[in-house]
Structure formats: C-alpha cells, structure tokens
Image 1 (cartoon, helix red, strand yellow):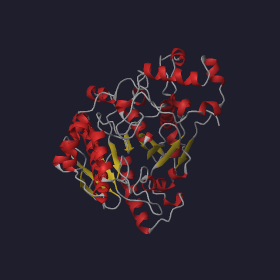
Image 2 (cartoon, one colour):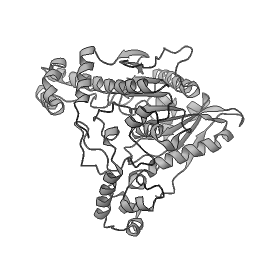
Image 3 (cartoon, helix red, strand yellow):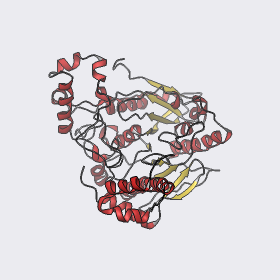
Image 4 (cartoon, helix red, strand yellow):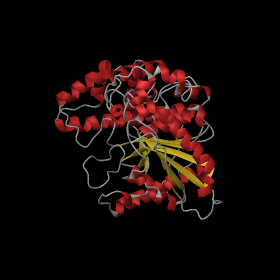
Length: 431
C-alpha cells in the first residue's frame, strides 16, 4: 500500500477520437476513509455501451487524504492543508479535461457523480473555485441535505471543520502516533498511519447518526474557500444541473427497526426535545408494529423534506435545474431493503458486475435508470422519449421522483409533517 495510487479507469465504445461523447466521472464513497475506483460495482461497460465515456479513479482517504496540521499548512504555498483527497479529485478532472478527447469523450460535457462521501465530494467540487469549468453536471446520491440538517454527520455542511479546528485535531492525532514533527510524521509506516483510520471527531455529535469521521473535507480557504451556503448566496458556485436524492432504507429507516412504543418515545424525546409531543401526534405508535412503521415513515419524510429544502435553496439562487429522487427498489438476495448504495448497480446498468441473483425485473429497472443517467449526462436533463417524466424542482416544491419499484412523482410528506420537519431543522443549534 502506498500513496502512489492515483490511477484512472476508462470505458468507451467510441469508434473515433472525434465522437465527442458525454463523460461520466464516478467518485466512490466510503466515509472519506476507504474506497477504490476499481470496485466491480462501478464497472462502466454498461453505460459505455449506451454512449457515455465512463471514468473511475482513486483518491486518497483517511490521513493520506484529509490530515491537517499547522506544519503542513506552513509548508503549503496556498496556506492550507487537509484537502488532499479533494485535490486528487480535481487532478483527475483536469486529466479528463486534457485527455478525454482521445477516448471519444467531450471535455465540455463532464458529469461528476458519487454516492455517500462521493456525493458529498460532488457538492464540494461544485462549491470549489478550483473545479470551475471542469464540471458541467452533478449527481449526488444520498448527498444533498438542507443546510440546517445535522442528521448525516459525515456529509453535513455544518460539520465541515475550519482549518484551525482541523489543525488542532491533526496535532492531537499526530501526538497519539508519537510524532511531533513533520519528519516524524513522514517516517510513520503505512500500518501506523492507518491506526485510527476510522476515528471520529468527538467534538461534534449529530442527534441520530453520531460523530462525523475525523478525516473529512476542511474549510481551508483554498480548496473550499467558503461554505456552500455562502457560495450559493453570492453566486460563486458552479451553476450546473444537479440530480440528488435518498434511498428508502437509509438515514434512520430500515427493514427491521426493532422499535417498541417505549424506545420509540425515548427516541422522540432525545431527538426532537421540545417538539417531541408534536412529533408523536403526527407519528403516533401504540404497538411494536406501529413503532417500527412510524420510525421508518418519519425517517423517510425527514430525509425527503431535508433534500427538498436544499433544492428549494438551490432553485432560488441557481439558474440550472435540480432534479430530486427517492430510490425504492431492493436488490435481490439480501434483507437490508433499498439500503445505502443499493442503487449503484442500476445507475451503472451493470448487474453483470456483482454476484447477486438478478432478475429480469432488476435488469429492466437498471435499463430504465441508466437511460435517465445517460440523458442527464448528455443534455443536463434526465428526460427522454419513453421515460416517465421527471420534473425539476422549483422553490417550495415538495415532490420527488420515485425511482426503482415505480417511476413517477412522489409527495415528500403531507403539509403538516413537512412543516414539522422544517421547524425541526430551523431549531437546530449551529454545529
């Protein structure tokens, strides 16, 4: 293992370097601590056969990708440290911009897409001044949430540390590894550096999903010059079309919540505080079955409303459209339902790439889902002939596109529940 890992994979069915096909660049997830571009789940042949040039790549994670310390900052000509993983991603996009014509790709139609930490990376690159002109569309899977939403600590904008905060934590981490100088840090073996890879940032805590990872993007003033919200308000982001959404069985929802009325009420009290009575009136549960059902219903409403609030903010400031979705299909041969990441094989139209008992229905869903992706990559709009219409979101729009078990519009939540979740987000303290 080494940092000499910055390789790309390219799939193309172009017959000539003059084809100018849309380019689809995938950024893997993994909580900013793991992942690799050659994962079979990301095999790009299915999308390449449909007309895209597909690129996957490696970027550094954990301390290799996101460690910040004062001495690293002092060494930098830009006065920053901690965003090496994002710089790797930007370097990959620059490589695509310079070289993708040789593979029949169009450097002026580059879609960046990713899931989980990859989805957060998509939004960070849209926000980064260093990626301006390199990104023309964005797909953020299980990514974009309202700026007041603390639910997904690893992804939330509000959990991005400042450079000074990241440097303090970096010094603590280095001391724990018995390294007090830059030379000592660089002398550590890979095994020593990976010790504590999955450590959390215990200085902040989300109400549901716990602490964010210690190693994650940093508001360093260079790669991330300002918060997403500030960039959007000042029109400094990359104004590109965006697809974003959530999955049915993630963000607190699951196929087996295991709730009881007692545990459900305790959760409501801990999470919603002064709003707990209103929550329980909107999501009442008197039996174990009802507690399970309402746990899931409230979590799903919460995530969809949060993403709709993000989309409302985007639509009020950006000229480019945003398309929201809610993924509902469970891959075969497992019991986790439409889990976190369950949409990826369908996005890539590559059921052949992983060993699951795929059915004709799965292949049909993958064929449909990937057509939306191809259309979006080509035109900035997922719609096309023979597909259910996917309307873009406008200010105050609370409808998402169901993808998976069905394809069509889906109300995020009824008016009373939408209003409740909006108040809940607005009541959150600054994180």
